[in-house]
Every structure is written in C-alpha cells, then in structure tokens.
Amino acid sequence: MAYSEDHIALAAEYALGTLDADERAQVETMMSADPGFIAVVVAWEHKLGALNQMVGSVEPRPELWEKIRAAVGHVERQSQVEPPESASLSAIAEALASHGVVGPVATPAVVDMPSVDTPSIDASAVDPSNVIRLARSAQRWRMIATATSAIAAALVVMIGVGVSLPDLLPDGMRPKPKTQVAAVQAPPPAPRASGQYVAVLQKDGGGPAFILTVDQATRNFTVRKVGAAAEPGSSFELWLISDRLPKPRSLGVIGANDFTSRPVLSSYDPELVRAATYAVTVEQAGGSPDGNPHSTPIFAGKLIETVPPPR
Image (cartoon, rainbow, N blue to C red; front, side, top):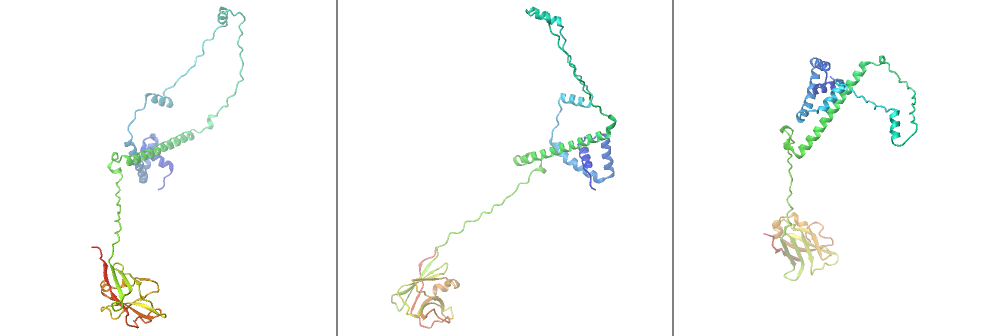
C-alpha cells in the first residue's frame, strides 16, 4: 500500500513522540487496522532510535522554560512605561532666574496629529480549522526537517569517526578492513651469455675460404667470405651434412657481401648442429633449383667451441 506524505510524517512524529493525544490515537488506530503502517512506524523508530542513543540528554536553561511558558500563555508579561513627571512652568522660571536669565517662559505648543483609521478584520471570515490544520502541517514538516538534518549530521559524524577512529564505533558499525594483495613481479632474468662455435671452411687443408660462426642459444649462423670468389653465372651454397639426416640440407645461398646471416639452424637439434659437417658447393646462379647439391663440396669444415657457455 502506498502512503501519502502526511501518513509518513505522522509515523515519523509518532516515533519521535511529538504528537498530541488525538493524533497519537489516530496513528494507533491506523496501526491496528493496517500492518503495513506498523512497518512504516517501526522503520522510523529504528532510524531515529540510533540517533537517540548517540545524543546525550541536555537540561534546558531556566530562562528557556520562562520563554516556553510565555509562548503558551501561562505567563503574561506586563511592560508598562511610566512617563516622567512633568515640571511646572513656575519651577522652570525660578531655575532660570537663579542663573540670571529673566524673561517669559514659552509654553510648548501641542500639535494635534490626525487620526488614522485602523482597518478592522472580520473574525467570522476566518476558518479556525484551516489555521489549526496549517499550523500542525507546518509543525510536522519542521519536525521532519529537523530529524532529517539530525540524521545527516549523525551520518557525517559516523563516517568521520569510522575513518579516523574506527575503534570508537560499535562492533556492528565498524568498517571491515580491506585486504589488498600487491602483485610483485620478479625482475626479468638477465640475458644469458651463450656459447659460440666457429667452423673454418677450406679445401684440402688450404687457406680458409669461409668462416662460419654459430650462436649456441639462438642457433643463428653468420658466414664471412674470406678467400673465395664465385665465377660469373654461379653461386656458392651452404649445406648441412649429418649421418642423422637422409641427405644434405641446404642452408641457403651465400650472398655476394662479406657477411651472410640466417636463422635457419633454429629448426635443428642443438646436438646435430654441433656435430654436423658444413660444406659449400658451386651451384647455378640463385642456388640449387631442387634442394639437392649438383657438385661435390669444394669447401668443408666442422664446428669447434670458441666461447664456452656459462656454468
């Protein structure tokens, strides 16, 4: 059931205890007939009861009671202003003569003020029930505004206490501690130095024609041309020869520059790479067309370890 603002205000004032006898009887009648309205009253009692526990009792000052009694009509204050006694003209004349002032004393003129007609109010034109209803409605909303302000102030205080001094709050109102897990990342491992292998590719113990360098970690190789020169219309091609392979595998054509680097050894087993024989054949320009060598190797060599891997 939806309740109007007046019903909700009655429930709040009933929880505060500010209703008169007739209004309390009205609320109690509504509560006996409507269980939903009981829930509204109980909700206001829970909201305002917490504020009542947090605020201590304060005894009003004596002069405040006097003002309250004067406001409700129990004490009638009478304030009368008595005009000062008028001095006679003869007394004024004698006072002036004693100071050497002689002369007639002027009588003050009396000025007649025009009378002002005060408009009269017809009391029969005023409906007393409207005045009482408006006064009660204004009082009700003042009480609701005061209660709302008190709730807001209490919430601000509770939030401030919960942040700065949470131990002062009851156990049920203390904020739960938050556990934050910080992920600490381990620093990346330092790059590991790898071993280096070198093969001198030469013919029948003659001078080196090519120098082959292989990195153990990446298995990338670099071929440096030293004393070999390809004939026009032909190319040097590098081959990998191992008894673990059915036939020689091409590692590509050696370029015309002094250095040629390729990563093709990464697809082979490290042990095969270290134990294999590396040979160079002369092929047609651009390399072998079918992936097979078309001449006998003219330069060959095996890898030897020049820089050992770290222990």
